[in-house]
Image 1 (tube, rainbow, N blue to C red):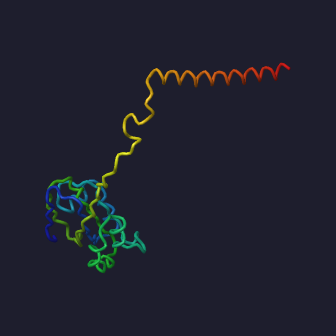
Image 2 (cartoon, rainbow, N blue to C red):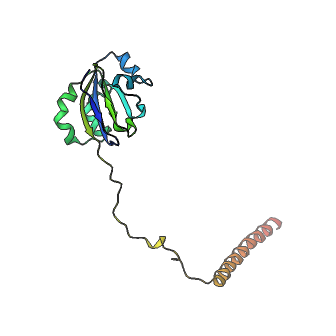
Image 3 (cartoon, rainbow, N blue to C red):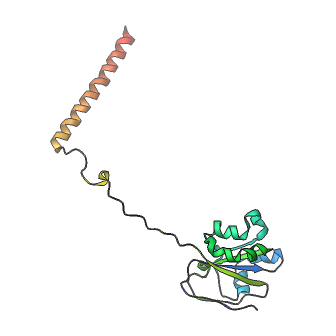
Length: 178
């Protein structure tokens, strides 16, 4: 057994990196329901927030690049651990805080699972600067016509369109007959 890791209730935005010192078949088996929870010594875990993959899949990007570009971890936070992260081989486990469903957990990983580091994801700033309300979104910004004037204008437009269409039809009939 390695050290015990305490996960506080309500934790958000933390990614834990583990080195998996096991055969590729065993690492793939950890994706099965209940298997990862068992080797971490907990009751259950949400596999939607867990990543298990061989470091070689990252090719030239590397684990440090994946953490900064793919997981949103600040470069300054990764910089001190860049060499140990680059030295990892085989499979790794990325465990996000959401995998625990907001509940407190006490991890007691099996001997083949070595905790490497914890990193905090950059929080998303959902705020935006206050914008002035555009004139077009304000009520009653169009021309102020009385209902009677609006009906009169609509009738004039309709009559003009009717006259044009009827004239075109008459012209067409004239051309066809003569």
